Image (cartoon, helix red, strand yellow):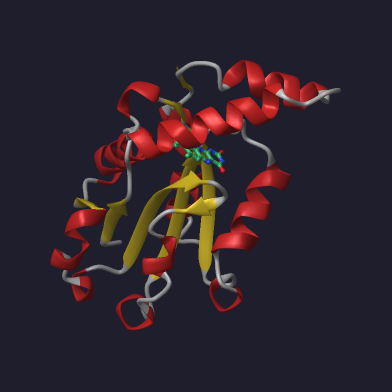
Length: 176
Ligand SMILES: Cc1cc2nc3c(=O)[nH]c(=O)nc-3n(C[C@H](O)[C@H](O)[C@H](O)COP(=O)(O)O)c2cc1C
């Protein structure tokens, strides 16, 4: 297997997972900004990582616009977010972000990241402020909304190497 990792990260969670994957696989790891330097014919497996941003996996649009570069390669998408792992929510993100024509070929994995307010830009901080306000304004919040409001009140880090287990196992089995 000749893999390459390309990742889109703003506050470091996706980068952290990309680096752990790089250690495990001993392969190149390239930030999104340098994606144009990648020589795709050298690799047979492309691992792309992006962060969830208001339901969108950032960078995924670019990835799925490269059918020629990805032809006959194994494509793995990993995406990080603040939401606790939940198969239904992860499936929703997959439906929203992987175009139908790619769903049979791409394997996707959700990796819990967290929130890092100190590393966010002003637009992200403002969006999170709006989100917190929206949660706080709920008249009769459901238990999960109450929990979400509690969690997003400050930074937290839920990233762990263990979460890469299913992705690494998938690669080891040759994706069968
Ligand atoms: C404006 C904004 C919107 C976000 N939207 C989502 C979201 O829809 N779902 C989710 O689980 N996490 C969401 N997050 C949390 C990020 O996906 C999470 O912090 C991610 O791990 C950041 O990755 P990075 O550190 O590599 O940039 C959002 C964060 C920000 C700042």
